[in-house]
Image (cartoon, rainbow, N blue to C red; front, side, top):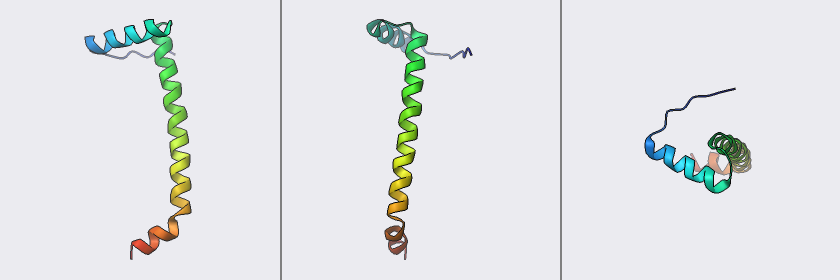
Amino acid sequence: MTIAVDLSSEQTAKLNEAARQAGVEPAVLLARIADQYFEHKGAFETAAGHVLQKNAELYRRLAK
């Protein structure tokens, strides 16, 4: 799949430099960034759900 993204010239320069430093094409770097985002997002949601469930009684008492 191809996705077009409008970046400012500053963002483009930063992306190109980061990709150069990583030794990959900018598109590959963006795909890696997307993968990391979704991995961390899922881990955060799992942890947040666990904390909310674990502390549900405490939150109920505090709400009174």
